[in-house]
Image (cartoon, rainbow, N blue to C red):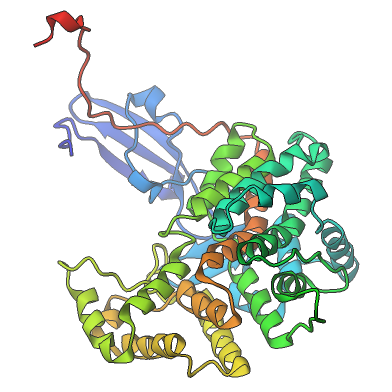
Length: 446
């Protein structure tokens, strides 16, 4: 790592006047920059002219202190454990709303009237089928392909089949693309699951709700009638709500960056799916189950708790703590309730891995180390347990995350397209490689 320059800059902040003065003592120069307030959360310093005025870049690996855009969709206060969608607390939405209503809210900014909700649900319902030729894509994959690999490929291919919704400058085509992506994602996900286990594809049914339809396409077989379980359907609906959007995370930022180049919406969402696949992002709930399998038995929990506290041990307690939340993840409170409802409904509390998870949760919540560091169970810890109990293999966990997050991605993508200040994303860097040198012919090199 390079050391700070001796010509370090100093800053004087005057939030009352909405400005900041940056000064470089060595050069005697100073520059004024504006401060923009948000309706919630910290204000931001406008650094768009920083390089032009000072010849300097900001250095912010991971963009942890950088606002890459202006957004009206989602607000997170990690210190207080707050998550708002268009101003509505996630707890209220998860308990009182349903996923289709939350989709409408994220896309349009307001909760729908009864008529608006009915029209929106109709539009989504009648876009759930896939073009029949797309089924050939599945047959091109190996049966043991990871469902996320299939989803990346199939979603990316949607633009080859739906040419009438790829013009990003046409508001109507953007709306159709939104509806298609939200509607078809459960069908794509369920078919990926069916293909992996060698069962026939199940087509969507218009009389079922969004969550019921997904469970029907995933778990029903042609030989029997499938009756949706209301407890499991409600739990699935909550899982979708709790994962619908989460501000400018890695996958959402990827969607925005891809979209800033003018790429079609299907390509942008495929890029978001690829980003979500990482174990540090959407793969976290899958990692929770792998961790539980590694622990193996309740008698070994204290051993692994001790390992998690040891700075020299690479073992991590997956599903605890969060990059943004330094308090209890507000989604985890709702997910914990759903978790216990599902386990009670299915009689799964005695299943060894699930019993292990519940005991790990109890011990960690009573341990001073985790309480002091606010390493509470997060949404990934509970969602993995629920999905396991419902019969999903771990390879499907991130697929379900992608299915839920699609509405957030398309809402953020649409907001970006309609933002007059948006430019193609082009981050800069702190270069620490060799200085300029001249090329030597190979016969002159030692």
